[in-house]
Length: 236
Ligand code: DAT
Ligand code: MG
Image (cartoon, rainbow, N blue to C red; front, side, top):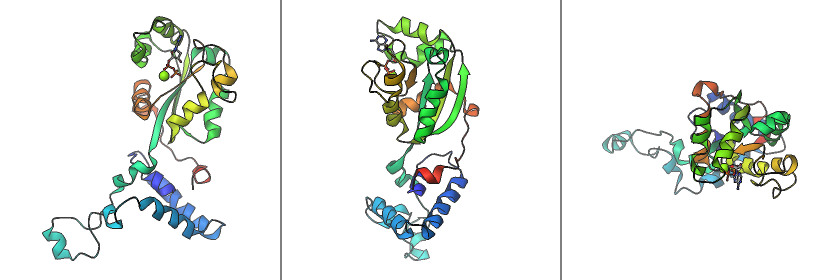
């Protein structure tokens, strides 16, 4: 399973992830989870495709002459075909000025850390008005827009980029409803806030906006792409 996530179409994934994935399989061989079980899972996931040959540029049984005649290169693995099964997403999470002023930064970061997502960007930042307006441009026509911009620029925010399979929707669940009085207990807003205009944290609402917002708040050089040691303990 891990190997599928590693092939998840993210060009920034390093080969060390691949090594750790193969190490997982080796560990499973001697542990309680059998290697066969892992293989079965992989086969089941791949069975969505018409045949194993669709994962490769051609069948290994074709002769060299036939391959040349068809102008196709032999046995080139096409990982983009399985990329959609377990896409690694990124999301932009921000502790708003009230969260920073109330000393909730550590508490909020720890919720995402404990869940098992990967932190790839982190900074304390005084947001300029233009950036706040760009970030919330979809809400420009709302009557509360000026107050929202004033709030977001009223003090430093903590900007974070988080990465993981399903991280966008999961982070929204961890954050809770926009109105903290409607947010479930156990969520960040449900536990730590009482008003929509002071709801302590932001989270991207779609994978597309996750990408857009991470790119808006971070320069590529600010982000750190790394392999957490706990990875094999989070995903089989
Ligand atoms: P969310 O932050 O849950 O994604 P949103 O994108 O609809 O919610 O709105 C962005 C922020 O704007 C929200 O966190 C707080 C503020 N906001 C939304 N609706 C509001 C309202 N009715 N009155 C005041 N502020 C509001
Ligand atoms: Mg929103």
